[in-house]
Image 1: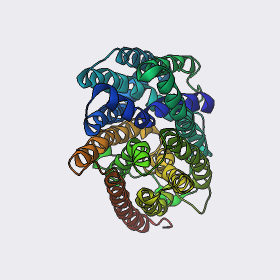
Image 2: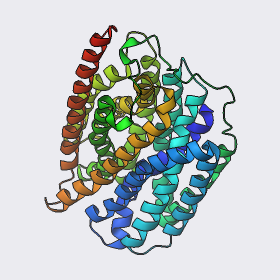
Image 3: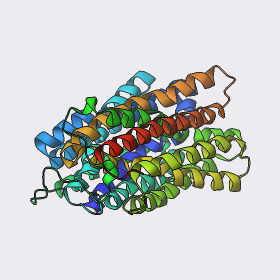
Length: 400
């Protein structure tokens, strides 16, 4: 199951995170400002995640198989059709809205499916699963660059459409686990700090609401940095091929970070929330210094550090939700969380693009914005930590 989920994440996140490679080719072909073109990638990223509640409902109603296969077919057709578009409106509709909806239907089942099979090692299993995102970024970014140079962005999109369709094969093997888990099971029950709170609505759970709010600036920062990293590197003196390679560097280090984070989150002396808090500040610092790089070696070092640290919050989301809410609420909770991330993903790149278009095309600005966004996540998660600490004391559990 981890393998199939890994492959789906490889394709869908690889496509989403590699849009920055298409920024210049689309700009040159359509003769439209960078900020306007970034709207396409923002819509794609936003819709992928905003589809979360619909995908979660579909998983609960029809299962992982049907949801994932439907998503792969929809995204494949939409991306293929986008290769025939000649206006930004048609690209936003086909590549952004429709393809994003299809990829969103693939995303939720490819992540939550592992929750049906793993208990004690859910964090590590989830880490392996979403490593596909980093590997996809590492592989698809240079593939996108190569295909664009050889066949143009239109030919590149046709190849991406074929990859999406191939994901339907993974859906066929995602059979449900017939072994039912206890209704109140949680995977790290030895960790008392995150004992599930009393049964109530998700949106009335203060910790869940804060976790959701904390994810929004973090995801805005992720998609903004991925979108503008290649163009910023070119502006700072790197070649187009080396600039595209930086996306691969971030992707590979991100993959390593997800494995490390997943492994660490299962250790008794760590916690998903603690890992998220400790790395948020480091992520803010690393993205802040990225614009000051001028040589390829400095870009590689800082980009590697950034990708390594960036992996933490996304990797531990599933085990954190299980510990806070219990396994039975995972699908819907993850759907709501994904929707909030989608809103953030939609806003990040376009807002930064508007600022760029009105500030002499200074591509360093988005990275300073990202740094502030990551610090916002840190502050919100600190509030969650304090509230959970107080709640644990009141219930007699051992606090952090």
